[in-house]
Length: 476
Image (cartoon, rainbow, N blue to C red; front, side, top):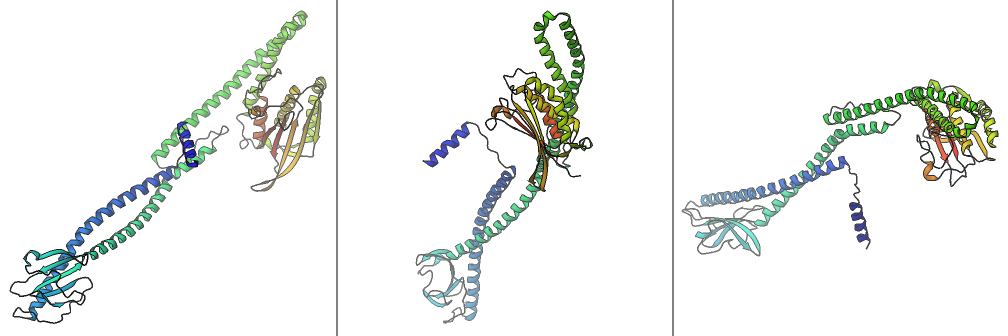
């Protein structure tokens, strides 16, 4: 049942079109192993087949030569053509010899049988090579009947010896093939590793590409294929950087051009409200829209100034020693009147923390956070702004972090919307307050310029929204 269930799951995944990733290096190695094994198997089969034929020829020739040599020796022992009866030293580990006269074995090797291998009255059909059975085993026999001699010579060996020789040869070939295969795999593995290494380098450089840095990659590879990929990718990065630069320039120019007419409209609207008080109610929606447009343009202009900046290129800008007590005091003065008007209390709790940061940028970030908290907090609620230092374990040891938290008692944000906060032009639905959806984007950009992080917490942990800005503390 479990196998059936696994099979069903596999089939469902296949029908859904889910593609599994595979390793190019493993695929190449597998193809090389498969092709090498196939070629080795075919080569082994052909070599074994040819060796078998050659072995039969060599052994048959050895039987024939042994019989001829033995016949000459036997004939030399008796010039009259009658061999001497008795023992002859014909011992061999593989071949068995017999000298036969009138059907009687008169000389033989010690291991040869006493009866002729081929015992028949008419031997004319048996001259030359023959394969016979003795006690269920095959024997290869060469029968030679010299002219002018009254004896014959039979030389034989077990056919099993041929198979043993073939088996030994096959084992040697398999061993040699295995060694060659291992060496081939090692060499090919090294070639594949170094051949695909430029791809790994390209992959590592691509991982470093982000929206903050679209710097073209440089692998210095000499491979045509890798260079083609590198050139195409660099062309894409260049086009993206150009488009992004044009977008920033357009945003800055458009914001600047729109700011002046909006200011003029705002002034004329205020003048009209003073001249025609009865139109104040009718002009309120227009005033609201103009205020929202002005707010949006101010944020767009600020983002246009912040976007080109990066922590590495503007490190001197961020090396101003900043005391949170001064920053909090200025923020308190800025929002005291607005908080009183809305019936909201703002409490600042500050540890004595100093940070290498840009005062103006951090002031803008916290101003946006407090302004958002005021907009979305009900009358009678509290906003808490705190700062503290913590020590965390990092890869390079214990490091110090400065944390600023802005927490309100508003309605909070749903978990599915929390992840999208900080995206440009994203606003939570159902809000009537003036806004552009760029406030948290500006805060996030400022925090990134300080090599920090921004974390958000809300429902279900909290009733309101808590924004934490975490900065590394650099020791002077």
